[in-house]
Image 1 (cartoon, rainbow, N blue to C red):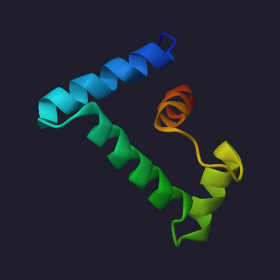
Image 2 (cartoon, rainbow, N blue to C red):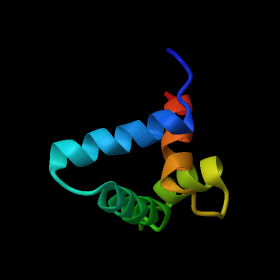
Image 3 (cartoon, rainbow, N blue to C red):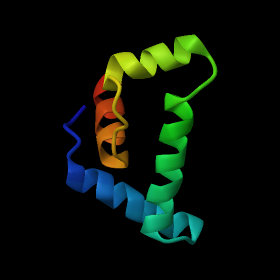
Image 4 (cartoon, rainbow, N blue to C red):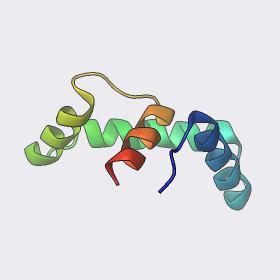
Length: 72
């Protein structure tokens, strides 16, 4: 498995946007919303896992993608 870089994450956004027929900004906004849902999940175990990975801060979509890629 290679190393994913920020540039690769941006290419991923472009690919998703093209496939879905939306803008890159919309893809990123949906990711921000999904990250927020994960961070504020009502399940304490899920919130704990999120906090273990990111602490008390909210990651950017790029940070989230890169960190999750490394976790795989």
